[in-house]
Length: 303
Image 1 (cartoon, one colour):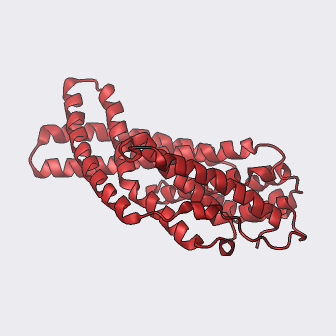
Image 2: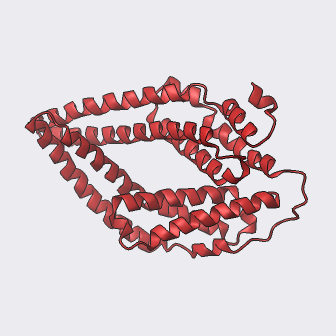
Image 3: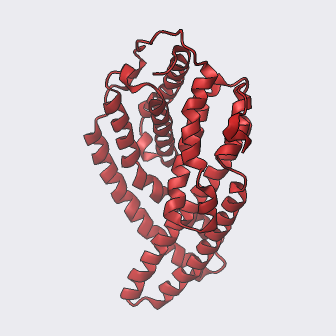
């Protein structure tokens, strides 16, 4: 159980994030707009991150609410990924060096647009089945335990952050040593959850923990771009295979040319991640966060 001071801080963070999600969900036609859809997905993840921090037993229906938010994120996942693919291909089309190259990309965009339309139809059905519960029930103020405890707000905040930092940052050296897109994507998710946790606990800091957030945002951004490019690369390889099976050598050649550019961009993004990952580990996180919380470094932070 959290000390009452931390429980109140987390509940206020929950209120802000729930209000933002409800505002987005109330906007007419949000699911048809690529950016609004993305914002709903982000807001759902931010709210979910706070629900992962609170004392679940003090919130009636917590398990169902958390499951519904995850379902919302999952339902929006494929449409969002295809929107990103379309954006990348559109950027490559704008920079096409020859009419032939532009024609190849237009062919790929037509395929992606068909997939986007199909994914949105499936999304609409999924949203209809999802039936989000009444999220406003989370605003019912939970019963708090006796506030007279030894742990301070700052100590309790660190107790929330420390295991998440160990999980998110503990294997960055190994990830930087070998490019593994699937493992890097999982690392991005863990880093994002850590960042959202820091943001939710911002009230425990003497001032905005911007140096901490800046480092996490940099890692998350590099890993996000890497994932997008790796996913686009996989889509292009599948397109090339299908064109080859249909005996379309000219289109195959154009796709392979584009694949080379995407692969080069992916490798450059991985190199950027490797540079950003240097010195990022649980000990470095502790050396930044504990003093910002007004806590002594401790043995782990001094390592």
